[in-house]
Image (cartoon, rainbow, N blue to C red; front, side, top):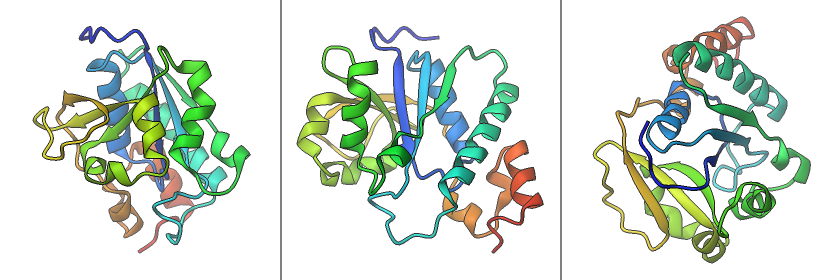
Length: 199
């Protein structure tokens, strides 16, 4: 594992997880193996600010799939000694899930030197400055961004640390269209047994 020099060894990973797929699991693995994160907090959105009109599985069902995905993760990466936690804070808070509200909740718990680590893919960088309460995020978030070549085509003025990874191309949209090959074993079985995400 690389020593990144980061004192804070916890990171947040938010998203709709509609559904959680194999790409999410590799992102957790990369955060552990490349960024030396020892604890990953998964934060499913209640209502995503960017997907307000999108159809989504019930929150509790998405959490159930996350729990199954964590079991799959332990089989995929048995040597990873990373703690994976699911937080339901956005359900408890209710309403639209804004990242800045979630950061304010976790900052006193996992933040160091006034900042907290937040995992993103480079596909989010081009619109990062459009996130709600962006000025607050710039001051209090260290974005851990995973890209294929360790670089990004999108210059940003936030605190972003780039990591090179062999990304697994996966899409929740494709799964919702019926492509279940992107799901890990237990998640796929549950989806098939319960007739979820039928095209």
